[in-house]
Image (cartoon, rainbow, N blue to C red; front, side, top):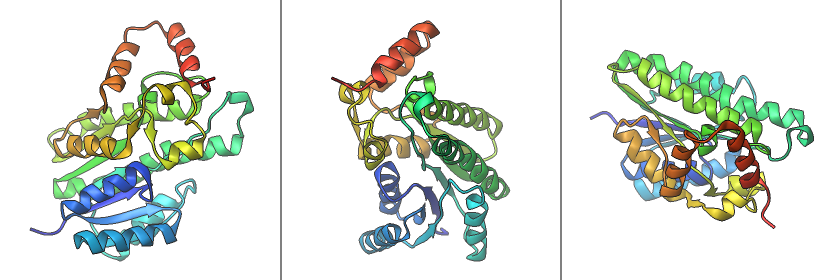
Length: 260
């Protein structure tokens, strides 16, 4: 069989790094995308040494609108086909909306929402032409409800969840599946950089990045549409559906506030 290739954004740490390892363990070649070329190249060398797969590095900042087209141009120049697209890159800006920086919030929308959509639309046609392919979009349990102190982040994740579930139905019977992974608080560098490790929700329940990645990877390979890893996260996502919206935002603000 022809070797398969997975493209993973935000691949240099956390869930993205764990997903890259899972693909490599299964002998699937990799295209790793993130901003830090030096970190990506070190990761590529490690994965190639351990698993014997081919790893290509593309250093791009998805906060830049031209990045998705630059990524696809690089793939085309190397005549590389993508069998698995993992839209994992994300960023977060914590705090009351009136106190946050406009530039950072707009960059968040570009990374979490626009770049994800753009890259999916650019790579889907070739998958459809081959009649095979899998897309894994990483959202969040925050996508199930509005969250004060995290308003724009959760709004972008709601988009990712709805977008994924909708196009999964659009692509039914085409040979291309779409899976949305919705983790809750996860112990990663992302959480540290976002300065959310001391919020009540994180203190109440958090998961290891490896477990989250394993749940998403298995779900994608099985062609499932929506994956919420962890019992606590499943119960929280389910309960939101039956809770009045006013209460959801009050509870959301309590859980997103810093503990103690």
